[in-house]
Length: 181
Image 1 (cartoon, rainbow, N blue to C red):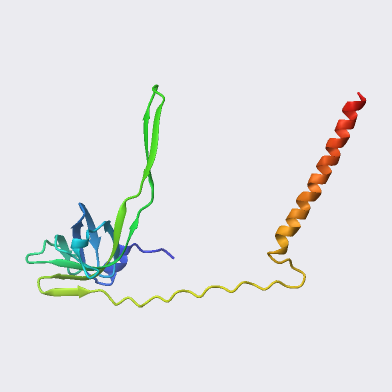
Image 2: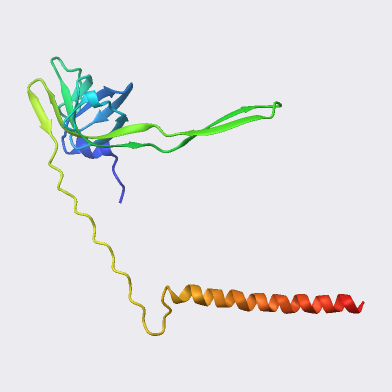
């Protein structure tokens, strides 16, 4: 089964989308999408909600895309802050024995798009059901024939001790040979 891209599945269902500008980048969003934008300052958030007023393009139906004529806005709910994957920065100068390496992790804010509104139309995302944490698996009980976790280190220590004895007997034998010569 072929997986569909995010934008394919959204346009097939007839959900509108918008292109917004946030943090110097442009994002194509639809209601219900989760995007990672540049870290938002506390002044841009109001009660874990954020409003993007710089809407560049909106599409109300399939095949239609235009600049919004009046005030358009995209509203989202802040899911949390985080840091992206590490990017290694490597400075190198040839023939000069100069190498410098360090890493960088870009901070981001995860936002779930809840509503897109323009020209009197409002498109909202479906309410996300609350997630329940998965129950932890119980530890399997050891059967009579199996070793328990506490017995394993003792068995490994006994094996190591056996190996050391055989090594010492070998070294004694080689020492006696050297003395005879």
